[in-house]
Every structure is written in C-alpha cells, then in structure tokens.
Length: 315
Ligand code: CP
Image (cartoon, rainbow, N blue to C red):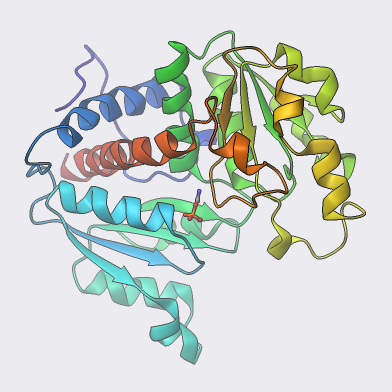
C-alpha cells in the first residue's frame, strides 16, 4: 500500500496547504496516491488502514466533489466517517467554529476535514485541537487536495511535471485552487502562467514565481496544460469585468481558440463548471478534457492524504 522510499519519513499531522510542503513531500503524496489507485481497481475496494479511526467532514461551505470524495476515501480506508451539516448544527444558533470543533473533538475524533469561507480556518483549528486537520478549502487561500489531484492528473498524462508550461486561466484573485496549483507546480519545476483580466490577477502573484499574461490568445500556442478556473461570482463584491459575455469572449476556452493550442494540450477544470462562461460544453466534454479523470483521481489522492496524516498521528 505504502510507497516505500528509503530514508523518507512522512512527518505532517495536518495538511494545511502546498505552501508548507517540499517537492519531495508532494511527490510522496502523489506516489502514495498511485498505490491507492490500485485499490480502486480491485473487486473489493476496501482496506483496513483507518479501522477504528473517526473522521469528521466539517464543511461550512457548499461542496459536491471534495466532500463526497473525502467521505468515500475514508470509507474505503475503513474509517468511521461523520458528515457535519452546518445548517442542522449549532453553528446556526451562533456557536463559533472553534467551539464546534472542540466539542466534536471531545467525542473522540481523529481527523477533521474542514472547508470554510474564511482563509486561515484550518490553521486556526490545527492550533486548538489535537486531531489532525485537513484543509478542504479556506476562502481564497488554499485547496491542497485539489492542487494535488490536479498535479497527479497532469503527471499521469504527461509523465513528469518538470518543464511543463501550465496556464491557470481566469479568476486568480478569488481562487484557492490557483494558489495550491501554483505552489505545487512551481515546486515540481513547471512554469505557471496566470492568465486573465488585470482585475482578476493580483500583482503579488508574480512573487510566487508566476508569469502573468492578460492575453490568452498570445500564450495559448506554447501551453501544455490549461487549468480553467470557475468565475466565482459569489466571492466578487464588485464588478471585475464589464459582462460575462465579454469575459467569455476574451478568456473563455472554446473550440475555435483551441485550434491554436498544442495537439496534446490538456484541458482541466476543478469544477463546478459555468458552462458557456469560462468553458464551452464541447470543450468541457471534448477529447482534450480530463475533468472527470481529475474527479476520479481525487479519490486516490484523498485516500493517500488520510493515510499519511494517520501515520503521523500513530508515530
Ligand atoms: N473542486 C471543488 O472543490 O469542488 P467542490 O466545491 O464541489 O468540492
């Protein structure tokens, strides 16, 4: 099950972001994910790795993919998994996330998976509870499991990450997926190009070693992977572009635009998709798209994450 590497010991009890991991640690998670992919191909897709451990899915913001994927990953590892619904919880009566987490922990929980609108929530919890904390997305900060499954999918399709040119296109300003991709991909030696309107690309992104382009058509011929971000209208408090139609015209990925891309370009999207805005339906479902493979790989990567944080608790 475990990817064996001489002299390497995983030492992180929490997974808070790819910013805090080395290239070797990221590669170790990807390699461990490969082992768990093999489990998903078996007739009986279950291993006893987390038997007796309790995992809580504490999603204080909507999710389809991440929540279900962590839930299924925990079940395949034989953990007891509890899904927490904020609207049915005492959060709706004014209890703080801190108090809720402490009360949940008092019931004997080993791993808390947290998604929250506020950046830094996972860090805060990791300081106040003894359980392992996994960041499933904190505001516009990081979404490490998504970054890892994206990089895993790219590695699977392209062989290696080093030397690739990856465009992250769209709403970089509000995107935790962009930040986790940038940390992970640059550490593994890819060149990342942030593409979008100037209003959606923060200046400081260049400090992370990222190239910036406001002209998608100019860069598209040199790109190996296009990771398309959702336009996050729910996080936008002011207008960042004149109209959705204008955005789609300049930065939407459509089949006409793809004619200028490399023959083997990969089209990725973390979901959920705004069809017809950042990507047209024919491209989302077309031959370059690996969007559903990303979702399938998410399960193996999340099994790897749960397994690795568990090894750190046990030692
Ligand atoms: N990619 C992603 O985080 O999707 P969900 O919001 O559905 O979890």
